[in-house]
Length: 164
Length: 125
Image 1: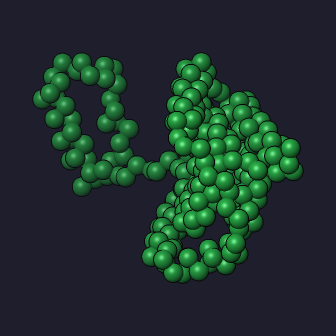
Image 2: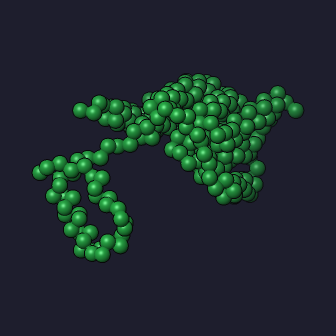
Image 3: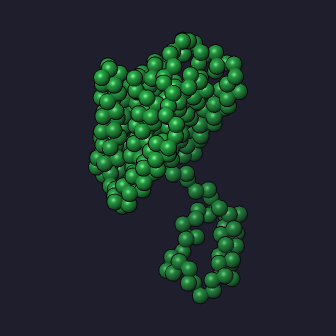
């Protein structure tokens, strides 16, 4: 048993437990906090895959940005509505059956596939390589992403403007 | 060493949990959290394939998915908070819709006892 196996088992346990808590807890605010834990442990999975740059992006954008936005939305809404928002679920059995079916389907597909090749050694500095790729072969995609962010910003401005 | 398949099974589990959340939650924020979990599972897949095939494209795609998701959450949260306000409609247009409904449904069988057009904000022409 190597150190990597132990780390993977630990991170997988935390990730799965917090993901389950996100979809099962009755408190919406707690669900968001569990989502933050799930996102951080996903970042640790990236670390196990030798991607420290993606780990940083995951922490900054996801755990930092998304969780802050959602927490703000919930707190503001609760203050406006003046009551705690309960998180109700319905059709628990049906949902569980569909989700389990999808999981079994994916795993069945994985089992049929060829045995994965062993992990190749990491030779280049990935962060440098990502930087070169972003301004090289993926430059147009990067520009498109910039356009998308501008559109999202304009949409947010449209919704945030005051009522005349 | 952990194989590729261990990461793929982990991602499939997270994806299934997120799908369960999307199917069972009843409010928009809860569904949004489930979608976040599903997107996260896809990111794990992308990074795992990129690492095991020594291919850079998966990593760059992960960066793009993360950025697009953040934009999506911003817009989605604004929507759940404040639905788009209805445009004021010309009163002649409302009258036209009433006449069309009268032609197809003269006895008022559709939406009995309710007047959906009454909620429309009108403005004088």
